[in-house]
Length: 245
Image (cartoon, rainbow, N blue to C red; front, top):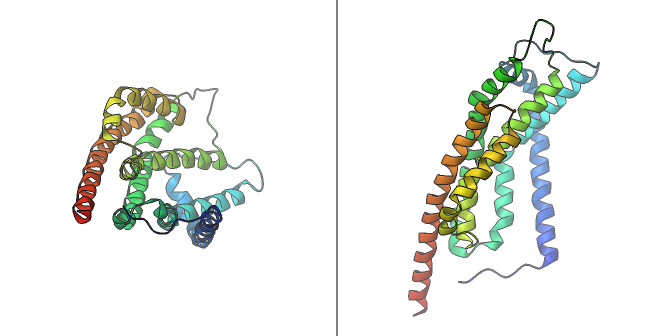
C-alpha cells in the first residue's frame, strides 16, 4: 500500500501547531458570535430550573463570558473536527482518505446527537432527582455559574462518548482495532460503561441508566461499523494485490 512521503517529527509538530491555531481562531470568532446571543442561550439552557442566583458581583458577567466561550466551542466543532482529521490524514492510506469529509460530518453529527440526548433526557431527570432532596428547612439555591458548569460537563461528556462509532471505524481502518476483539470484549465493555456512567453522571441510578443504555447501543453499533471497515480493508487489499499481479 502506497503512502505519501513520510513527515518528520518537526513536520508533524508544525502541522499540529497549525491545526491548533486554526481551531483556536475558529473558537474565538464563534465565541464573539456566542457573546451576542449569550442571553438567549442562557435563557434556553436554564429552562429545566425555575430560579438561579449569582453570589458575587462579577459572577453573572463571568458566566456570560463562559457561555460565550462554550457557544464558540460548540459552533466551531465542525472546523475543529476538520482540522483534527486533517492532522490524522497522513497516517491513513490513500484509499482511506476519501472518508475524511465523512469523518467530519459523522463526528459532528454524533457529538450533537449526544448533546441533544443529554439536554432533553438526561439533564431534566438528573436535576429532578437531585432537587428532590429539598425539604422545608433545606432549600436549593442554585448559582448560575455552578449550574452552567454542571450542564456543560454533562453535555461534553455525552458529546464525546457518542463519538464511539466514528473512533471504531477509523481505528479499524488503521488496523489498530478488530471487530473480533470488540465482540470478545462485550462483557467487559458493559461493566466499564456502567462504571463510566456512575462517574460522569449525577449519583442516581436513573441518570446512570440513561447514559449506560445509549452507550451499550453505541458499542453494538461500533461492532458493526468495525465489521464494515474490516471488510472494506480486505477488499482494498485484494484490489491492490490484483493490481500488483
